[in-house]
Length: 190
Image 1 (cartoon, rainbow, N blue to C red):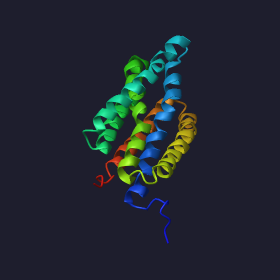
Image 2: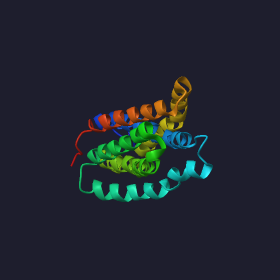
Image 3: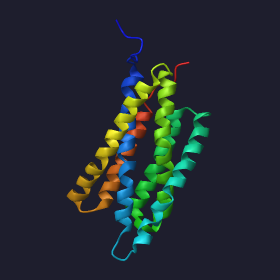
Image 4: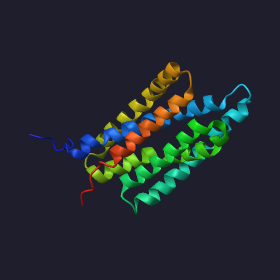
């Protein structure tokens, strides 16, 4: 007998953690990568941190605009668009370095601001509100575990290659995997 408080297992239950994990792995490591890419011997500390300083404001802007968008567009498609914007910022930073740090940080901050809100929205749409706390807790725990592991993963890439550029390319790959996984999510049930 299944307890009425236990969430049911469905394709969505199984497929939701994967894009959230890939999503969280990349942006969590961007801040150290941005700082270390910016902090060259010729840079002053203030110059090195300038691109990161406005990320919180950009993140809030991302939350507002994504909230507006998901009311009108299928949420996984919104997530994919945001992820491609984030990939462009990460790749620009990896390829062009500090010359594009401010616009790259803007795009990355905007993208990161929406990710946690999208998880909550997607959980509500795919699973309803019956066991929302339990299901959201599982999705968010997956997200946080990946967020905690990402600096180690990308630090290992940096140690192996001697450059943060390879870490940024790795982050872009994780974000691309997340976009591919979001594209596999099913339509919402009515």
